[in-house]
Length: 450
Image (cartoon, rainbow, N blue to C red):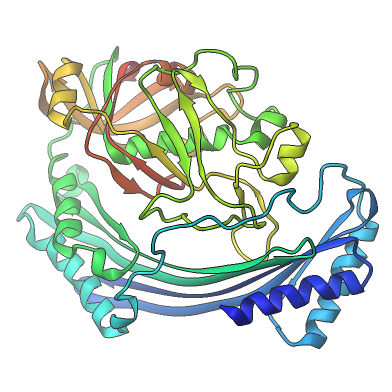
């Protein structure tokens, strides 16, 4: 890690030498593995590395420039720094741009799986095949497994800037999933099983494959449903998709640009009082947990929804200055190739007290939604209205009554938040819409179209 910090520090210093008034160096070294299994055999195996440096340079009046490259020697960094300064000097003024006002590194739990290095490629292949076999063996009604995938990454990140901040961290992550089919022909139904952790040792192949089979089989014999307004239970997969969208709409940038249904709603009651949603960049086991964000601001837990109201918005340094607020440690970047921007880390829904069966009983008659189609394209980013395809299981008298497909559920995000009647007790991590930890949600009413 020391080498990446020193390179980042050198990069920032060279930008100052080139004429920048302030500067930042960002370095990244990441290794990734992906194994795809089809028909019990490895279809593809990819091991890739990404190693690079990015330099942000600031000139007078908040003009900023960014340049990145893959060479770490001083001559290459000097050329890169000069390029970043050149871009900054030609850029438009921006009174809100600049280094963070308050850099720092928070204390986190272990971000690296203790046994990560004990898993060689052969062992990872065995795990991926075990997931595939488990999906096939879990139920004789499984007719096919579309694919089973294992993937992991090990990343080292460092930041140094001319204001004196210099730090780095290392993190690992792994996930596996399987997509199983049950039935034949027009009655072919699909189910997804998923597991996530800091390393392959935290993944349960039998559970992942078994979940894929179970979710496919439970939809066998699915039919259309009647159109009506009724309670809807979103399972953890679908709840995570909606919660991820809501978190993105609560970014300071979305509000400032008028691209959020929450514009003008920061003082209004917009959600059920018992619904608590946080952005937690430090939570143990969170895929996006880290000591600092993509510009060197300490990550933290930020309350987003509490007591029925918007508690905070998510800011990086630039949008915080524009909104006359403070950064929440949400300056995120995908890699060294890009600059930071406001985005969620780990979106966490506080657990309720009811099991899924108890949520079904509370619902009475309605629909358990296990899958939605076209959510991201089907939600209006300004109004929050949505109408998306859904499949799941009918609820009759508080019991699961039979699978349905080709349904549509419709509402808007604010109405949905206000109609959250109960939150389940059994939470799980889901990567849909970001890194989301949630339980099933009971929505008191949605429009269901057959």
